[in-house]
Image (cartoon, rainbow, N blue to C red; front, top):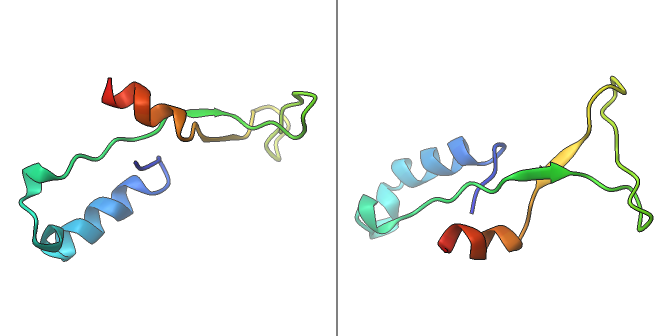
Length: 69
């Protein structure tokens, strides 16, 4: 599982290390979706510094099952 922030770095790490002994087609990278970040249990959203956009984060473990399906 990767995210927008980690995907390119993960690919680079795998390539630099020859996929740690695996064949490239043995490795499947799945990028998580991003969802709005909540600031509390009341469901309030976190705004970016410009106050015009929502802060987002990777969706989390729920994506694993959906992407595998």
